[in-house]
Length: 366
Image (spheres, rainbow, N blue to C red):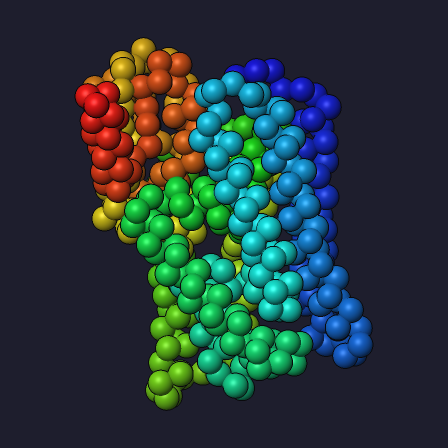
């Protein structure tokens, strides 16, 4: 990999600091103060937050993707990383710009993460929920409908995409929560100190945390499903929703940015509840890193660049495929391998490759 140009790297780090600081301030005001503020002030706060989350975020993704490409170089061994960046640019332009402009609903981005990541889509089905009230007040009945349609369409696309292309489809191509930052800002992370490899004890802790977060997410989903079908629940559904909001702010938003500042960009991906579900779907898809294209020279570069601390080299020495639920399919290891020994694959990708190979043989024969 080429030496990182200091000007580009400094600019990338500066933009990431701006993104984090403004996200803390604006998210805190929007989620903490807006509900208590006078209606005209609350409306202004909401609009500023939505402009930041949609337009400014998309602008950052465009600029920082360009900077990252400049930093990592233009060699052929950046193919998968460039593909990741292109995917996030398209996703951001679609989710944050084109669809909101088309349906005039600028909160749609919050409904582009399938269950069980958030219960926001389920809250839309309850006319007494604050989510329903906020969306309908701002965007009218069509706002509710458009948000729910977007959620259903994205959920179907993500599920089918993961069955075909593995976890790479969501986590390294279209995730606009943590996935985009891990790729777009990758050379700038961590913001403080040098990049640290997560120790085995910490990995085991995060593994436990993964299942705890999934259980908590499924608990919130179950509460809302039971509530919607008329089951009387102990406690108050509004309180449960408020606890989920605090969980999002503290356990996800803050933790995600903590990892960017101190460790690795993919820190949140270790325990993302949606990522956990998709890792199980990816197993059905046959997701793996093949390690027998050429031969392993034990340089350990694949392990060094893996943001999920997976021991790829240990498998590659024996030509054994890597199938790990932590793998987000980012392809950093594939790009970094000096002997081009690695490749990302699923059953669908292998089938397409075989068909293409047969077509080439047929064309040569003709």
